[in-house]
Image (cartoon, rainbow, N blue to C red; front, side, top):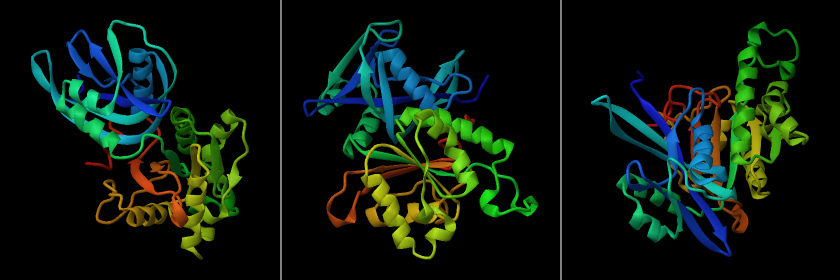
Length: 318
């Protein structure tokens, strides 16, 4: 038996006529009011599980946004306490409709205040407060380091043309499955073959061209980092959900610069080092542009891999 039970869920929201409402579900098995959530299936990431559970419990197709946090608590399994974690995202309901089912017999769309009042568990209220700390509608960007490539020391050709290794292609396939869950609609990459190959599958699925971003390559970024950060902000300012593939020499500086500018805590950083493993991604969420500073970074959360792992979101976060 696993020593950890993992689950995922979301604060599911919709905006009708300017009125924000949140989904709260009643589970007859526990006779409680809860946010939509459920256990991970074998081989699932937390993002996949969150979207699937939303669909199964509420009947709505959802698009994920920013990561909201994780709660931990013990549950009894055969009379023994086993730790359980639940990772939560913000998620917009885009289509569907509720029908009572075995797990959920009632769904209510409520205001923030009413949802807080009805939720059974204080931990769910804490997640709701995390959601309420920023606007519901944000621009979310997936900022990805290229997947694993062959060793530079073993590559005799132009380094710009060094391709992904087999492990890198597996990471790229994981990213291909992840991108639709967040509603990715644009694909951009530093002009390196390994950066492009990392996101090529996503571009193919969207039937779009990959836009090359010289300022987000190591050679293009470091002569003028201010210009590189401004380019990333311009991409965010265009709206939608961009997927941006870059390099390990760029991503930590961009993320830390924006976090320092906008007062965002990088809980994944250790000793001032911002992580950026090959194939990893930062989920960056921005508010709408305001004034000359462009979009404001609201949250930055690190996922070490797009592939299922024992605990992908916690490997670099407390």
